[in-house]
Length: 115
Length: 115
Image 1 (cartoon, rainbow over the protein chains, first blue to last red):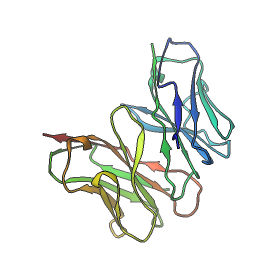
Image 2: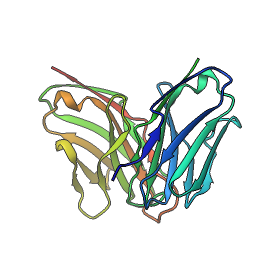
Image 3: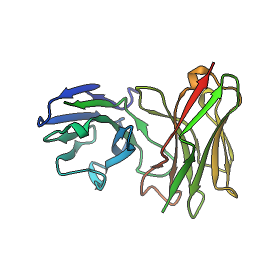
Image 4: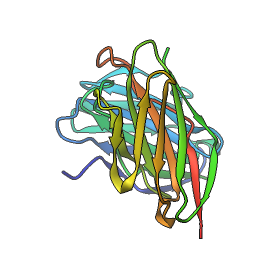
């Protein structure tokens, strides 16, 4: 099992550019989560999907952020246009369900720097 | 609504000393409880979880946690700290009522280990 795979590991971009972060969940996991982690705000849940359907996107900070899950094995988080305050580590996690006893498996994260 | 509180954002211990990281939860029924560890520049990984009647749960790397319903607590302990235990630790709670909702994470406790 390769775990949750995120790409890229590091991304440096200029303000105003579009950024796309990618995630491949563990095969068989029905739920996928996007988190953002910063020193100031800690770990924040941005959005989560169940069976490829977005369930709760109330954590998405602004309309500049969007997430898709076109199939069970792939999800993207897009920021357009990016701003310096978007600099953070973005984690993807997957699970057999959104809650219950299963817990989540996290990817290694994408460290985004917007200059 | 469920919530989890981690007492102490930073804990420092000497190598070989007892590690005690505190977590209290708020839930109407005994929930599922989890501890995650995050090493520098890595994602969160599951340390242990409480999902059954066994109140003392053993995890990886010599850590264990005890579920105490009367105190609504799930504190994490390790008898003897190693330098390699320096990391951030997150407590999380999930509703036992079903697979709805999602994991609620605490704000984390950074553990420092002094030589």
